[in-house]
Length: 192
Figure 1 (cartoon, rainbow, N blue to C red):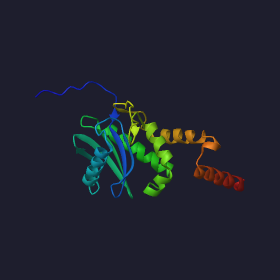
Figure 2: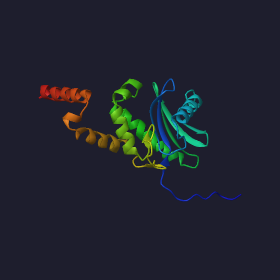
Figure 3: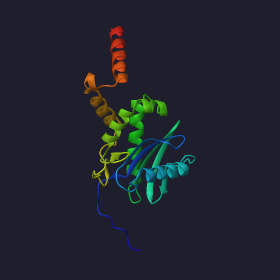
Figure 4: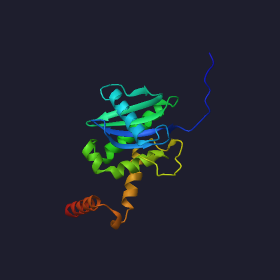
């Protein structure tokens, strides 16, 4: 039996997906064109949800792809890689994403809290994996053929996301960010 020899490569992911407990997309970022249209992506997401939402395992081989996943209350987080990708690296990415979200959402990893902090999710995913487009690539754009894993330490991801959030000028912050900042400043001034 001949051993399959693969060229050395960077550890990569094909997609990161977060679905709610009904299998509806909350977040999806595809790093290649395995599923080029939204219709194909939605079909894949429905398939992946139907195969995993009642399972206790953390890994699956589906449509020739390695899928690692984790659930919390009403969220399902998925990291997808090719069939020959190292499952431990994919799990490291999943754990980094999940732990980063847990810290950013103050251990409240659920749908509503995630929707209230989507900008933090986008920044965290960008810190963890480089490349790809969220949802659909703009017409005529060239997508990166792979998402390269940049970080697997949730502490570093949360720190970088927090630093990016602090650098935003007041005029570019959302109303909720301004209110949150004002609440924190009032709290600290009262505690002095």
